[in-house]
Structures are given as C-alpha cells and as structure tokens.
Image (cartoon, rainbow, N blue to C red):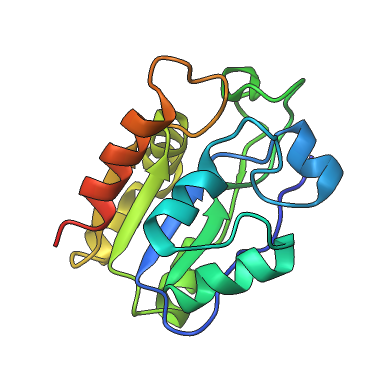
Length: 165
C-alpha cells in the first residue's frame, strides 16, 4: 500500500506525522478519513477549522494555520489498518531530508502516536541530529484503536504540546 503526498504549503510551523494511512483513509484518499478518528476534531479545536467543510477546504485551513500533515512511511505491507500489523522490512520511508530542506519554517514535529515516533526514530534517526532546532513531540494517537484516552484528554495533550504559549 502507498501513502499520500503531504498536506503542505505556505510556511508551515508544525508537521504532524502519522505512520501510514488506514484502510478507510486509503479508500477515501484522505488523511484521517475514519469517522471515529479524532484528528480532524482536534484540528478544529486547535485551529478553528470547520468540520463541516469538505476535505480540500479542511486541508487549506490547515495550511493557513501553518500545519503540515504527512506520514512516516510512503509504502509498506500491512494487512488491515493497525500499525502493529506493518510488516517489518517492507517499510519505505518518505523523504524527510528534502522536506525539511524545502520547508525550513517547520520547528515542531508532532508524532500522531507512538508507532509514528518509533518508525521515524528507526528510519530517520540522523535527521534529528541534522536539524537540531526541530522539537519532536509524541502525541496520543487520534486513531479509534487508541481507546485509552478520551477525545478531550487527547486534545489537552495536543494543545499543551503544539500550542505551549
């Protein structure tokens, strides 16, 4: 399965990284398309997006808010949607060196869940050293599979890590 190009434009300050789109997202060709995924709801709370807007309008609202979205993996084998099902050795990583060079305005990288962080660390460890001004934060996954925290609890962490001022 192959992922999507990034949602990016303008001068993004925040880059949100998932692991790889799930089945619902791949079918819809939209990031975070599963109706129970809290991603768009959290973005609406943090950046005043209109949840009723169509997908291209929500993407443009993110760009205006200085938020970029991508996944760590460009391609992998994964039966189903769970990150734990990604077949190790099939992982193809997106080109972050080029992204950070093209978009030097990014100063925060937020991992949407621990799986995204682990994949990035495993495959892109040297990029952290090459970009010492970047701040990396691990956020609670917005996936419906992460039922340990409520939407409000997830939002509180996202807000504290991405909007500390």
